[in-house]
Length: 213
Image 1 (cartoon, rainbow, N blue to C red):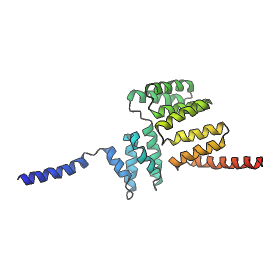
Image 2: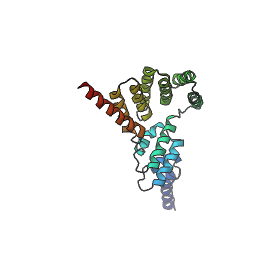
Image 3: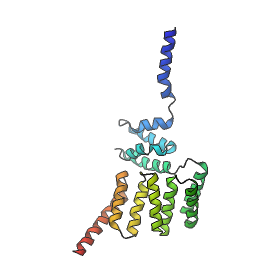
Image 4: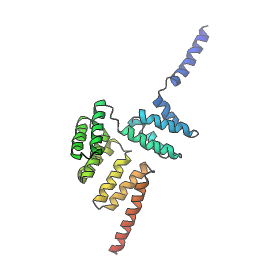
């Protein structure tokens, strides 16, 4: 009897962890299944709702998935993860700032994102949104400084890397712009508009060199 009881405990010990596995943890496992595209798609959808910053390396790999739907879903999932601060009050304030951006209340948005940064400086997306507002306002040096803060906290943020490129285009530094656009593509190779910008800027640089000869 005792032997049977011990055997039963061993079975439970091996089965219970799998049964108790959270949807988030299951999704991380499913994300790496090369034989099941439907499972990978569903995994990315789950991580859009449950993912955390520690999941970014796995999600970044999914940006190179052979399935275009998985890649597209992954882009959205990463933005969702980036936009969660882990603090409900900050998330509500963040939503206010985004709405202010959307209705072009830009000075108010700067104040809102500055308050988010003051209260939760580790939240990279607060810096990124303020960088975006500064860019729209033409405050390019301030936008660059905020992009620095984003990348210090989230090196996978291809949006901020693209932002550098856009700023350097405005500052008429196409070489620097190409550099940062290529960094964005190194993280996320699916940025078609960024690829096109790189080709356009390379053509401009070539023309400038010809004109100086």
